[in-house]
Length: 253
Image (cartoon, rainbow, N blue to C red; front, side, top):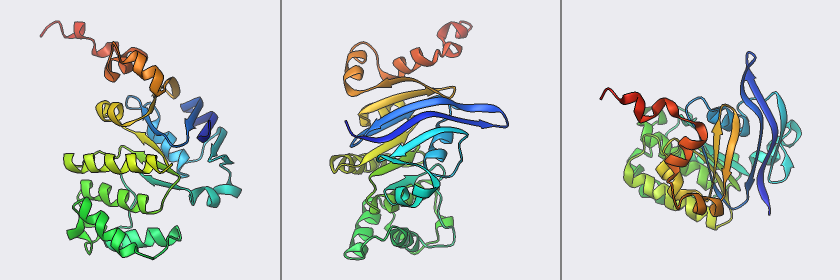
């Protein structure tokens, strides 16, 4: 099976405090992959490393079969797009200027580009902000704008860090529709989210990250077996041993 992402023995520490501990992970190509974990598990650190924002201490990463090294960074970034939390925007650009600039960086053809931009802004109900500077947008509109720019680059691998945070319910449904379309066209989508219900309904494969390590990888087949008796929230709690939230601690209620 072709792999979009291969991580081997990835280690990252902040001032000798380990965040990722010899982490190993394979993500199949053409897959909507969900990474879940409690706060402090290392999800944002991992996304930061995979998108080139953070350096790592040890290990190796391959994206689309290419080692993620300084020599290959430009080649890899042409195939990858991301929407981070919070989104990274050019604050003094208008929404339209931001999208067109991102497309220029990826050398996206200008043929029908204006039409595509207009249709996306309208679909996500932010067309009225086309000429508004990004620093004036709400959190939800910023997230939707970053998402529009990312998908216009035609990525082979799309990283989405908490993509539905601050986004309205209707737009979440539309984002999920676009994500599925991208998957059906062959793209791989890597999602981190603390909204387990969204991950459960959207993702093909799911991995559970806890204390810097992958505790479980649940592909579609193993998920079907497990979810006969438990939902994802129950499975998640079993793996991370969330006894701090067990009901017996609330016996006083």
